[in-house]
Length: 454
Ligand SMILES: [Zn+2]
Image (cartoon, rainbow, N blue to C red; front, side, top):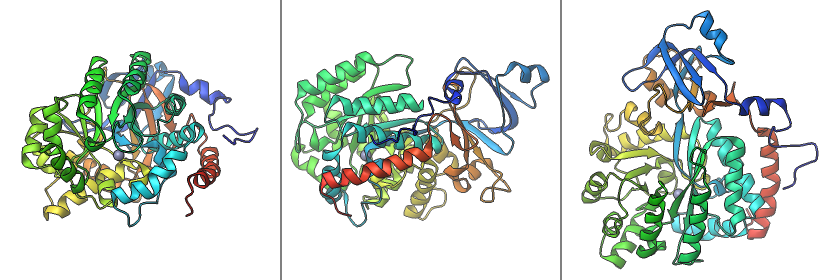
């Protein structure tokens, strides 16, 4: 890392760090509170011990205000459960804007794989900080990083450290493949995962999961073993499936089965499976996803940027399949903007079917919120979005304002486990300007090492 002596990305040296890392008694009032049963037009929320302590309509009395360490006036804002980004690759924070004109496999071979090979652990730390900061700034309180650059334990440790320092919830789905380019041995993968699972804190915000890259890069036998290991530790398998038609054809040629059916035959398709993309799934595969209660992660922007296709998301929702939204990595999106991702999910579904009712605003919002609600005793993970802006006011319908009008720049405040990690549109645990400068410097040297001239 090339930090100047007087610079620090993290605000640890400042008082604000200590103040914000403490969980406080927080009172949020004057806001419009999202609840699945209907918006509470004006109310207040009390947070204590990292949890939502109470939710009330109306205004708090003087005693309630006095009781709080921090009072947040949410006038003009919507208060929602923190957004969930179900799929990302933080290393790709350094690979934005490179996909133009290249389909998935060409893009991987010519650009992404060479850059990934040249990544140092320090690059990984900075790229992770950047990806995490962008997610948090856009209202995300939990992100799943399908962590691809696993050259050394230090690379994975760098992601963990970055997430812990910023304070967001992060699941590191440690990517692996045991066939094709640079295969890893089964014992190396299983042993490393055993250590990560054993070391994770039950109440911690950073967790681990198994991340087989794709069905065509992994053997069935090792996917069965890593899945069983993940389930033993209360975790899950997170895997790219049927992103492109080519991939489906490869699996059919090899196994005689379509990818989802093959995963089912292996015994992996259950409630602990996260199927990322599912663009090219047929009716029988969607029935399987429903019957096994597997979760799908829908990545509409990434699928559109790479020209991969449009997932049949309304058909899956009709079957009550659990779906979260994912931005995917910034190399194929090319941001971590979860609100834009939600709006494009709506636009693509409706355009593809010439049907304005194909995906409702509420359905899209439920995917972004991972079907969570604001309820008493839930973890205090909240995102507050300004709606008193030129693009959102005046408001007819709060859900439409959030899904179709507001942008991620309108996110004002983000609270994770009772800690205020963003306030007044600024992150509290990291210096955004220093981070951008540092990443810009480091990227030049990374490109040189990867032999990429752009
Ligand atoms: Zn991905």
